[in-house]
Length: 222
Image (cartoon, rainbow, N blue to C red; front, side):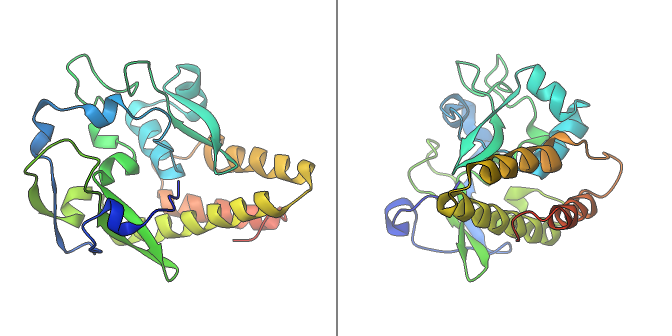
């Protein structure tokens, strides 16, 4: 989700690239789980997140939803899935207050306490200075903190997905065709989330193929 705030109010004023060092390392969180217990419906999931969770847990989207691990809501006028709040925080938070899906955790969780600042049809990273409750964080290289294989391919995908959703949100704001808006939300959820991904095939190839299918269906352009 986009936030419209002054960067000076939420960050250290710097923008970071993958090979920059940033003071984001929470050193295993030192027993803190504040961000996991106060996430509400803010952990919005993108298709890569669903791919990772489905592969790691051996549960497709329908099963994740049926077992109330995720739920669906409106985010910037778009119907998108998010991690379900179990009442005491994230549904994947264990009794020991640890992440039960750490190796496959969503991109927003991997980022934290970093955020993404989109500019010039791309993005950089920034450090959120007031969100993480761990003090005296250590320095770590951004790409190491994220821990995502083939980071450049992932970043290209994240950028494509962001601007895709941004265009859809603009359509939702401007269009008075309620039927078309409903159709867009249904197709968005079905094509990019509900229809299973092959866990043994390359995610990015599958994702871009679906974007091609979206265009063939005559939906809103990227």
